Amino acid sequence: MIYETFREAIQNIWSNKFRTFLTMLGIIIGVMAVMVIVGLGNGMTTSIQNEFADMGTNLLTVQIMGYGSRSVKVKDFYELVEKNSDVLGDVSPVISMSGTVKVGTDDDSYSSTSVKGVSEVYLNMDGYTIAQGRPLNYVDMDANKKVCIVGDYISRVGYGGNAIGQSIKIGREWYTIVGVLEAEIDDPSDQEGSSDDCIFVPYTTAMRVSGISTASSYAVLVSDEENISKGKAIIENGLQELLHSDSGYMVISLSEMLEMMTSMVNMVVTVLTAIAAISLLVGGIGIMNIMMVSVTERTREIGIRKALGAKERTILSLFVVEAGTTSALGGIIGIGLGYSVSAIATKVLAVIMTDMPITVTPTAGSIAVAFGISVGIGVLFGYLPAKRAASLNPIEALRYD
Image 1 (cartoon, one colour):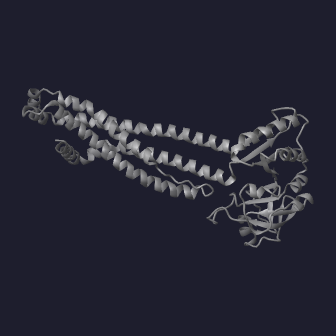
Image 2 (cartoon, helix red, strand yellow; image 1 turned 90 degrees about the vertical axis):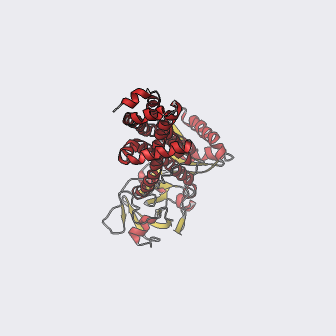
C-alpha cells in the first residue's frame, strides 16, 4: 500500500514536471539559503577563532587615557607587571606612529603600512617569526636606536627581498633595517595593507620621535589562559591606584573579545536563517495551493476511487504523500544547490578577503533541520487539501465535469 501510494505520487509529480518545479522553488531556495547562511556563519566563527589563536587568547590589551593631569609612566606599568609576575608575563608598550614611509630615494610612498613602536618581546608575544636578520633587543630600546623590523611585503616590493642593512624613511627620520618578518599571507600578489605590510621600531625611539613621554597602549601576556580574569583584575586595580580613578583606562581580553564576536556572529546568523526560513513557509503555501488545484483536477478520479471502496484514510494518505514527496524532492535539490553555492562562495571570499579566508561549510545538523522542516511543511500544508479530497461526497465527485 505504501509503495503503491508513493509510486503514484511520483507519477503525478512527473506528469506535471514544470508546475511541480515551480511549486518546489520556494522549498529549494529556502533549504539552499539556510545551508549557505549557516555555513557562512560557521566559516566566520572558525576564521575568527583561528585569527585570535594566532594572536593568543591569553593576551591583554591595555589602553590608558589618563585622568586629568595624571598619567601612567612606562616604568610604573613595568613595575606593576613585575610585582605580579606569577600571573602576568611579558609586557610591551605599543605606540602607533604616523608619517609617510619611503624606501631609499624612491618617491613612491607606502600609505597603508602600519608602523608601531614596541619592545623586544612584542614580536614573540604576537606570534611573529623572524625570517632574515635579527629581532629587536634590549640594547635597541636602551640606546633609542633607529633600527627597525619590516614585514615581507616591504622587503619584497621595496628591496627585492634584500632589505637587511638597507635604509627606510619613516616620516622625517631614517632607520636601518635589521630584520625581516616571515610572510603570513600565502598569496604574494596582494599584500598591501595586510599583516605583512608593517614596520616595528623600538618603542623608546617611537616615543622620542613622536614627542611623547609615556605610552597609552600596552600588550600584556598572561602566564596561563585560566588566569585571564585574574590578570585583568590585577591590572585594573593597579591602574586605579596609580590614576586614583576607574575611568582613565580600559583593559581588553582577547578571549572576551573572541566570545563577544562569536556571539555577535551567531546572533546575525540566527536572524538571517530565520529570514531565509520564510522561503520554506512560502514554499509550503505554494504546495498547499498546487495540491488544492490537484484535488480540483482529480475530483472525478477521487469519486471513482471512493465508489470502488477506497476509504477516506487511503485518499488522505495519497495526497499527503504526494505533498511530502514534492517538498522532499525540493529539499534534495536545495541541498545539492546549497553545496554548489557554498563552494562558489568560498572561492569568491578567498579572492575578496585574502587576510581572513572564510570557508563556507554547511553542517550536517543544518542540512538535516532544513530538510526535515521542508518535508514537515510539505506534509503540514498538504494535509488540508488532502482532507478536502478525502471528505468529498463520491456521488457529487462522480458528477463533477
